Every structure is written in C-alpha cells, then in structure tokens.
Image (cartoon, rainbow, N blue to C red; front, side, top):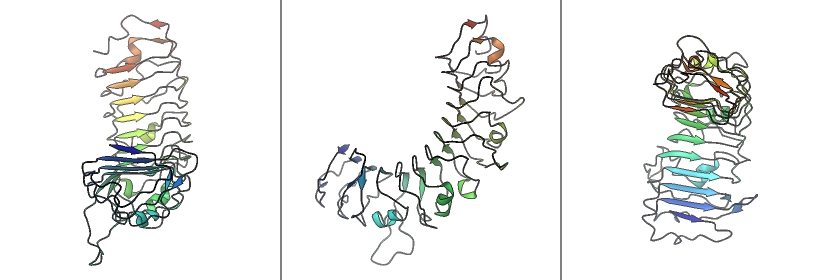
Amino acid sequence: LLRLQLGTTNITSRTFQGLDQLQYLFLEHHAPCCLSLSLPPNCLESLRSLGSLSFHGYCLTYSQSIYLPTSLRHLTMRNSCLTNLQELQRLFPDLLLSASSTPNTKPRALFLEMLDLSYNLQLKQAGVRDLSVLTLHSLILDGTPLRALDLIMSGLLHLQFLSLVGTGITKLPASVTGYSELRALDLGKNKIQNILENGDLPVYKALEFLSLHDNHLQSFPIRFLRTLPQLQKLNLSMNKLGPILELPEGPFITNLKVLDLSHNQLCDVPHGAFSFLSQLQELWLSGNNISSLSNESLHGLRWLRTLDLSWNQIKVLKPGWLYSLP
C-alpha cells in the first residue's frame, strides 16, 4: 500500500517503476480546492498487481489516455473538478473500450467492480449512452448533484450497488429495468419525506439492503416494503418515526434479518410490534426515548441474536421481558 500527498510534485513515466507488487495506491490532496495533477499515459503500466487506485482532491484536466492495469477493480475520483461522465472516456479509455476497436487499439479485459465519484460538486451531466459499455457492480455518487435519471440515460445498467448519500434527493429513483438487478441501495442523508409522494411504487425486486438513514420519514413505509421480497437489511435510523412505532399486522417481509430504528424519537413499543418479523436476527433501537419493555413488546422474535437498547430512558424492565428471545 502506498499513500502519497503530493502537492505540486510531478509524476513521470518512471515514478512507479519497480512496484510490481503494489496493490493499493492513494494520491491525496486535502484542501478546499482541488489541485491540478498531470499523469503521463504510461505511468501506471508497471503496476501489474494494482487492485485499487484513488485520486482525492486532484484535477486531471491536463491528463488523457491513462493506461489502467487489467488487475484494477476499484477506481476512486473524489473531490475533483469532474463535470460530466464523458470525461472518464478521455482520462481512462480502457474503461470504456468498445468492441469497435481499431487494429491499433487492441481491446483488453478490464472489469471494474467499484467506481467512486463522490463529492464531485460539479458533476451534473451524464451524456446519453456515455457508460453503455462499462461493466460495473458498484457506483458511489455521494455528495454529487448528478440526478438518478441522468444516470439511467448514460446507459449504465446491471448495477448491484448504488449509493446516493447526501445528494439532496426528495424521492426514490424511479423504477426502471436497468435497476432490476440492484441488490443494495443507500439513500442516506437526503430529504425523503414520503416514499409514495406521487403514488408510484419503485420496484427493486432483487434488493437485499436498503438504507434510508437520516432522512425526513415520518411513517414506516409499509406499502413500499411489501414490494421487496428479498430484503434482508433495512436501515431507517435518524428519521422521525416516533413517538409510537406503527407497524403492519400479519406476514410481512419475512426475509428481513436486520432492522435499524435507532434515533427515531420512539417512546413506546406496542405489544407484538415486531411479531411479523419472524426471521429478524438484529434489532437496533438505541438513541430513542423508550421507558419500559415487556415480554409482549418483543413477542415473535425467536431468532433474534442482537438487541441494542442503549441510550434510552428505560426505567422498567418487566419480569420475563426476555422470555420470547431464546
């Protein structure tokens, strides 16, 4: 692993020679404004084992056609002056090398698992079909103004993980076939108040992890969650679901194994509130105003392994309150 805070240091084609075992390379500049960094096209060519490459706080405006090792799996460009996704094609043509290569540009098998473009505050455009040939599992766009609709138009399909934390969105990304394989979606630190604002239900049938932490939710999104048959982890912490938790009755999201309701101003857990979550293994209720618990409050959680009640106002734990948690 090599972490460099370079300032205005120049990088040459020989800078990284001899580091053929290097797996992680971080180039960082921590300042309010990004710093210009020029990279020769072949400066990374000797890094045959490189799996993760990260640029933080650098502007690569004067660089182009940078060679990426075929071993690369994670690429990060944070806090840069990136304005549109098409710039990736100029910087790293290997990422978007299509089948229509010329005899002089031999295609290479480069499969990127994760692309992190967080906190590029000028990233507002995604050209039509810009990323249509990019094979990618995870895309992180935290703190960027890029709209989810623009992302769809870029042609980037078959994502498994999408993170849009702190992007200022007020509703869930629309349901499209391109997101049908999405397994994890993080929409934390946004301004979502009501998932069913327009009456339309986004459908993510393969979704296993959903985070809506630190939004403005005031009610448990029951109708929406019924459309998520594969959901296993749900994070609703730091919302406004209190003072009384209102949950549905009857069978419901039976595959859910982790539920986080921390910091929701909850004062009371009604009898049998979690009885519909028969497979739940972790329940997080910290940072609320719960004052008492009884056996009926936790009824039905026979597979529960973890229960967090820290930082509450508990004064009474009634006899046998853990009886239903074998």
